[in-house]
Image (tube, rainbow, N blue to C red; front, side):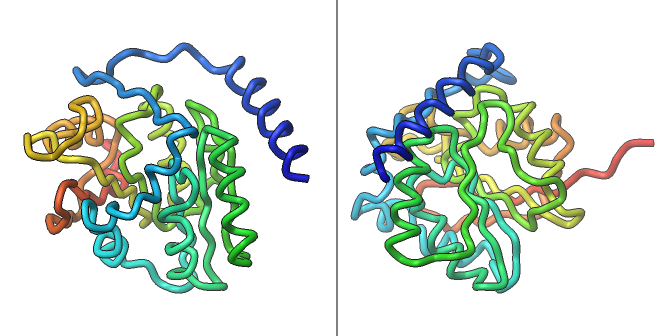
Length: 226
């Protein structure tokens, strides 16, 4: 069964990637980072991640409540997806989006092992997360946005997926801090984040500064100009 699912995912990925538009090398003066390969998925669940990123604190500051519909964008193998599913409860829903079918395969195995029923895995495209329109109270992107090869298309699609009062939450390693031991292309400054969000019709509504290495910034839909 697992082998059949793997080959089905592989075929889907091959067909999807063949239809992708060409990717830019930079955006708004920022070099776009390469997506972490699925073979490095063990790094996502490393034991020291909690100490380095304070993931529990980050999730506590999301304000998740039972019944919410949320998205873990770039979910990988589900490091944040599973705790988010617990937080929104049986009446809530978590869309878990990743462009690599192998990541979704690993996530599905973890979902099955824990018997979780409120997660909807989605194999997204490079320019489309394939989320239902007006479906999400929150879309969380942890160390993911800077890897988008088509940021404008993705932000446009995510805005359509938000409910009217929904928010997009960016968690990104701080480029302003040289002590953060991450490659420069995998960091973003607050100024760069604001620049890119504002040009795409998003406004900062709040932020949390209590993480060891990362910015945590909440963006809502900016009012439309007359």
